[in-house]
Length: 233
Image (cartoon, one colour):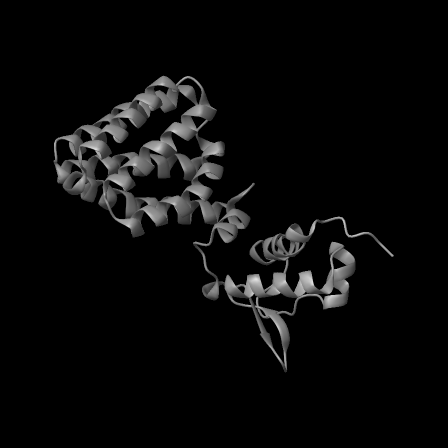
């Protein structure tokens, strides 16, 4: 009898990630059935219960549906929970398509200027301090791309946090999964990173001074530049 290579707590997670990645990358096309249970047991090295539990999890993410007459099939993309952390990871990590990068860049343009505007209206002293600390970290890491990526994500998260809106912050935390992967591609130039610092400073200053329109305009400049970088890398 073959030994199951996965501990109990990891078996169904292995199924979820193996099948989920295939669905999101298009290897399993919407409308088509997934491999039969016996095939998945043999291929993934797990038990039937792990396969069934994994299918249930993927159904909860909107990727699969099970019907008595049709078996388990891949659902169309519009049914997927696109902001689910796993779905975002399978879509953007390690390599995002040009189309996915465009979608993410457009989302930032649509979302982040408004978040900066609300932050200028709502931020308390503690939130402004967190933005200033994140800005200082950006300056401190400008010569080193990897820490700079982390500092940049923290700066933008601080602004979403300053908006005092749990839905906005949740959305940012989800899309940051994708942002981190994409920025590994287009945030490698030290010179360019330094060029972006004045725009980030303008955002922070506008929020600190409660100038909501200036905050919105400054953030729009930041994300428009980021979109241009992403689409031309």
